[in-house]
Amino acid sequence: MERNCLYCDKPIRFGRADKKFCDSGCKDEYYNSIRNLEQREIGRIDRILKRNRRVLKKLYQSNGGDGLFKWEDLVRGGFDFDFHTHVDDTVQRIVYCYDYGYRSEADGFYRLYKFSQG
Image 1 (cartoon, rainbow, N blue to C red):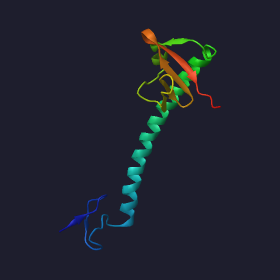
Image 2 (spheres, helix red, strand yellow; image 1 turned 90 degrees about the vertical axis):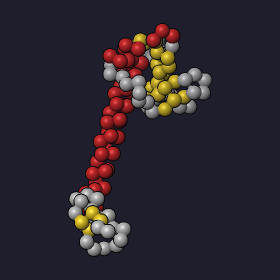
Image 3 (cartoon, one colour; image 1 turned 180 degrees about the horizontal axis):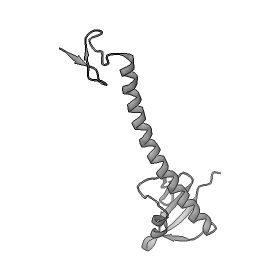
Image 4 (cartoon, rainbow, N blue to C red; image 1 turned 30 degrees about the vertical axis):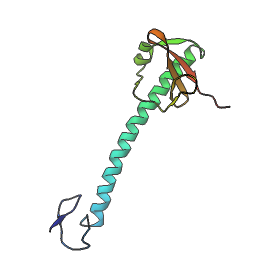
């Protein structure tokens, strides 16, 4: 049974029966390419989370940390509701993006919160 390298697809002619790569260079390139794909995806998600935090922080500070904001205000700032870091369901459902969060109120309004420890 002929085996082929997972990276370059050349035949593997010698070595262990479970050998996956023709040489260490192909092995390194294969795993580097996987790691690069993962890092790009993590970077993309991190950029979205950071943008969400900036939008929440800006709206929170613009009103002195009090008040309601419309859904449109968040979206206009580039907020993506699909991404958040955690949810606090202890008393009321507050969705956080790092240290700033929001809670849905009536009629498309949101109340913003800043997480504080202690």
